Image (tube, helix red, strand yellow):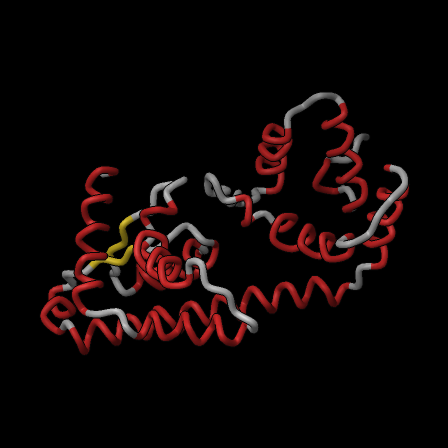
Length: 225
């Protein structure tokens, strides 16, 4: 009697998956079969977010550091170095990556809590009526389930950020141009001087600058929506 896929070991399951893939069955169809057999919950991958794939934000980043500055005589040499790198990658590396993700989320959630408190103190009338909106970009910390769950729990209204629209982020349409204009054509001997000048530029921004920023942001958002 043939064993069902769910009764096989992990290695046997992988062998079956590879066999189906070699037979030309699409990955989506294989995933659907596994979902039907195991009852897996499929987490949809958000559009235009390759940085959410573990290979992109974790493995490839480590691999780039390993290969940086090295020269190879043939493709075989590159393949050998890559294979050796993955074979020698310790389990602790995966745990460190996991911890860094958790730490990053904790920091961002802390920022969200500070933001809510600032709205409560500085805009009490809007806070009381929940008459304020949040606009953030499509960066991974902004769109993960934990963050979205936190915002939904507190009934925070969000404006979705359109894909391929970095110019709609206030940093790009307002802060970065201000910095560029101030630093344009200037030379600095040390990174510390660049940081000091950048901080001074940001501190010198006036209230009218921020008002102009949000007026401009509103016009650009209205064009999209």
